Length: 74
Image (tube, rainbow, N blue to C red; front, side, top):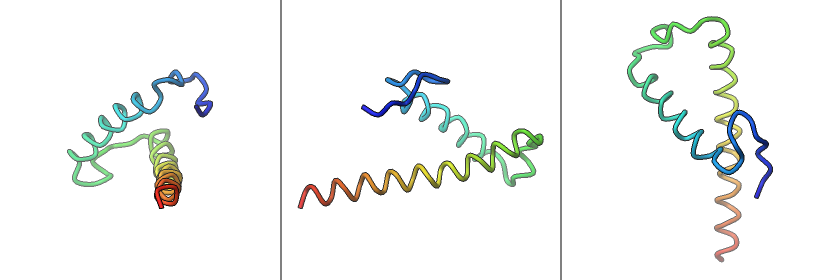
Protein backbone atom coordinates (compact mmCIF):
# COMPACT_ATOMS: atom_id res chain seq x y z
CA UNK A 1 0.00 0.00 0.00
CA UNK A 2 1.12 3.55 -0.69
CA UNK A 3 2.44 5.54 2.26
CA UNK A 4 -0.30 8.09 2.90
CA UNK A 5 1.32 9.26 6.13
CA UNK A 6 -0.75 9.71 9.24
CA UNK A 7 -2.17 13.21 9.20
CA UNK A 8 -4.85 14.51 9.08
CA UNK A 9 -6.14 11.00 8.30
CA UNK A 10 -4.68 7.64 9.19
CA UNK A 11 -3.29 5.92 6.10
CA UNK A 12 -5.67 2.98 6.27
CA UNK A 13 -8.76 5.20 5.94
CA UNK A 14 -7.52 8.27 4.08
CA UNK A 15 -9.59 7.60 0.95
CA UNK A 16 -12.78 6.87 2.91
CA UNK A 17 -12.40 9.95 5.11
CA UNK A 18 -11.61 12.14 2.11
CA UNK A 19 -14.72 10.92 0.30
CA UNK A 20 -16.79 11.93 3.32
CA UNK A 21 -15.17 15.37 3.40
CA UNK A 22 -15.56 15.83 -0.34
CA UNK A 23 -19.25 14.85 -0.09
CA UNK A 24 -19.74 17.56 2.55
CA UNK A 25 -17.98 20.05 0.29
CA UNK A 26 -19.98 19.03 -2.80
CA UNK A 27 -23.20 19.49 -0.84
CA UNK A 28 -22.21 23.01 0.16
CA UNK A 29 -21.18 23.86 -3.39
CA UNK A 30 -24.51 22.53 -4.69
CA UNK A 31 -26.42 24.90 -2.42
CA UNK A 32 -24.57 27.98 -3.72
CA UNK A 33 -25.54 29.67 -6.97
CA UNK A 34 -22.12 31.31 -7.35
CA UNK A 35 -18.69 31.38 -5.76
CA UNK A 36 -19.62 34.69 -4.17
CA UNK A 37 -22.37 32.91 -2.22
CA UNK A 38 -19.74 30.70 -0.62
CA UNK A 39 -18.48 33.85 1.14
CA UNK A 40 -14.92 32.55 1.39
CA UNK A 41 -12.38 34.47 3.47
CA UNK A 42 -8.86 34.86 2.10
CA UNK A 43 -7.66 31.58 3.66
CA UNK A 44 -10.62 29.64 2.30
CA UNK A 45 -10.19 31.26 -1.13
CA UNK A 46 -6.57 30.13 -1.18
CA UNK A 47 -7.66 26.63 -0.13
CA UNK A 48 -10.39 26.68 -2.82
CA UNK A 49 -7.73 27.35 -5.46
CA UNK A 50 -5.46 24.64 -4.04
CA UNK A 51 -8.38 22.20 -3.99
CA UNK A 52 -9.06 22.89 -7.65
CA UNK A 53 -5.45 22.09 -8.56
CA UNK A 54 -5.38 19.00 -6.34
CA UNK A 55 -8.61 17.65 -7.82
CA UNK A 56 -7.05 17.95 -11.26
CA UNK A 57 -3.90 16.16 -10.06
CA UNK A 58 -5.93 13.40 -8.38
CA UNK A 59 -7.97 12.86 -11.55
CA UNK A 60 -4.76 12.54 -13.58
CA UNK A 61 -3.55 9.80 -11.23
CA UNK A 62 -6.91 8.03 -11.25
CA UNK A 63 -6.99 8.11 -15.06
CA UNK A 64 -3.46 6.68 -15.11
CA UNK A 65 -4.56 3.84 -12.81
CA UNK A 66 -7.57 3.17 -15.04
CA UNK A 67 -5.37 3.08 -18.14
CA UNK A 68 -2.98 0.65 -16.44
CA UNK A 69 -5.87 -1.64 -15.53
CA UNK A 70 -7.18 -1.56 -19.08
CA UNK A 71 -3.73 -2.43 -20.43
CA UNK A 72 -3.36 -5.29 -17.96
CA UNK A 73 -6.76 -6.70 -18.96
CA UNK A 74 -5.80 -6.89 -22.65
